[in-house]
Length: 339
Image 1 (cartoon, rainbow, N blue to C red):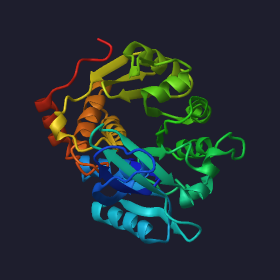
Image 2 (cartoon, helix red, strand yellow; image 1 turned 135 degrees about the vertical axis):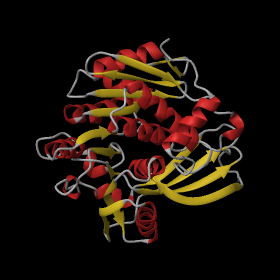
Image 3 (cartoon, one colour; image 1 turned 180 degrees about the vertical axis):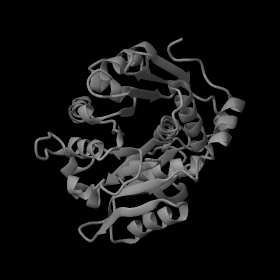
Image 4 (cartoon, rainbow, N blue to C red; image 1 turned 180 degrees about the horizontal axis):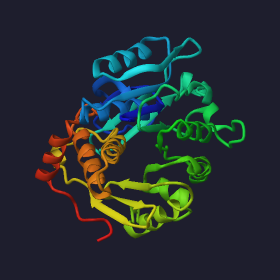
């Protein structure tokens, strides 16, 4: 029987920098803390799942450079028990990296990324023949030049890879990047015919559905629910989930809706929000893998995200499932976004 998560696509290194506040141009600002961690959808999903459940099988698939950053990612996999047999190193370019600035004053994060070898990541770098995982988690459309373009009969390489994964017997999940609305819609819709699960934010689900999901700069629950119900009809999706700071909503193929407010983590517990979306996706996907009902899945997603915020790196604050849920119960959940 298949078991575990295959985390594929964007494997990169995050250079995390904590600053007091974002500076004006042509000025200087002191870096308060600096560290190197794994980043990107591939790394974050894999490490988050392992932190939630060290016994869960996790496989890595992607392309890294033959450099110090690439060796850092390989060492991270080895330390966490992640199968890296298909995390390939190449001399064709440097490992994808991102400069991540966490501003203490605003709580916001800003990324500057260099795709490096990520620009040549292509469908031929994905081989699912030997995977024993149940789910493949794939990202990030919009930041990989070759994958974003057409491949064979498909308008994007992402669609080609997702179709191949389903044919190999895996269930598929996609993570997206918040970019121009039309670009999110075009790339995302190319993938919908090949998705079993979709976990994205409120802006991304709105772009896919062609529905405005925000009012006064914040997610509007009923509109998010409408967008989810529209998108779930556009392919073989079993479930679509959208998360935002105030909560999350899930829609199933049968038309049911589930909602849960986010965890009310105290402000003084928050070190940064970098990776909170990935951590939510990991908690939710873990629950789906285990056969939980959707409401319980998104509650764990929120708990995992809240725990991740306690540390500036993307997933190092996450603890095993039971500890995440206990902390969430202690802090409490916000009201349902569609109550």
